[in-house]
Image (cartoon, rainbow, N blue to C red; front, side, top):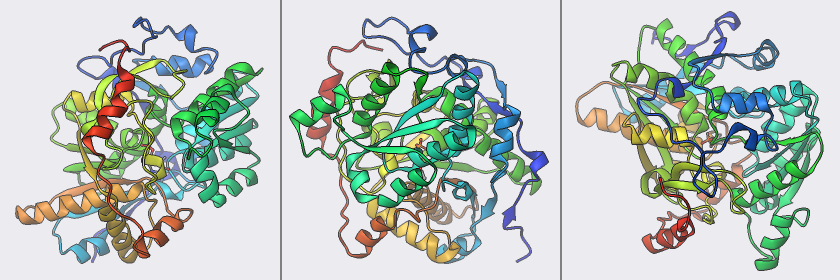
Length: 453
Ligand SMILES: *Cc1c(COP(=O)(O)O)cnc(C)c1O
């Protein structure tokens, strides 16, 4: 009983630099390219992002200073606690130790403000007045709404139609933080109008919303776009999670055997695992595991190819694991894990053998989430439940092998705004969905004619 279950860092121990895995990859990540297959220069991204963030996007510096005004806001909730899930361990009867890094303590309830604050700051000092973004389930939109308000910028959010209709509370959060929220596809953009003409009842998708947000950003004055995952600078800003976690393990004299994160676009996973990937590259024995939904399995079943980040193909082509930019996911409740692609850096880490990937069906995830809530108290986001389900699998397997492991997962966010998903689970309305091969093949057709890796 005397073992420490909540490892906290002092404010003064907060990391002052982000870690850039691009400095340590044995082979570099293939560069983003245009439709002609030629690498995209930084100046081509300038209408979309401010140059200071573009510099981070292409940087191979190992350590990048976190500006003081960003640290000052992050200190509202950081350093976040590393917690030992002793009651979950007891319920599982495992001799392994299970830890979770609690990113649910941020004001928006997830890891997303770690980069939202930084992006708002860099846009602000670049002279930008308005930020446009998109949101799936609403977590990114609400993180951005809060961050823009705290940094003194306007914010407009295109929200995927199905979430806009099903998740009124996230909308209200954005409004409370002073942002404008529009259902996507909308009639406000050319991309939105074209999709609506083809399919007026479309539930929308993240890829469609990205098209609308970029179109709006590049056509308005003093306006830029921001993205909550996938890009290198987002991975970079999230590394504060893993850097803190390493310090916290040092404090209690432990080091994890396995580090787990759920993966939508890959940012919380990267944030947690990349600082450990650095150790792994330098000879440390640690397993890093990405967990995605079986219904949207880009890392485990997608093609590794050049693909666009959005359906109207406004983004450069990125080398990533993808289901194809035209993929419209099933309406599973883990809204944040429904993206067709995966961050190029995460995809590359898997290709380089630094990281493993696995896919878990949603019923097992909800079961894990409910067990977690009933033992540890915190109610996880449906996305986070994928990491929990994998932590449980790891503990069970260690038990079968007669081993005691130190398992850590990133607890990416709470589920207090996602209770409708829990309701559907309790009512027996959720089923497992395995993406059929023929549907995957069909959706991958859209990669034909794109430059090859
Ligand atoms: C957005 C979100 C995710 C998925 O996004 P990543 O970029 O893959 O981290 C996971 N968990 C929570 C709580 C989220 O809000």
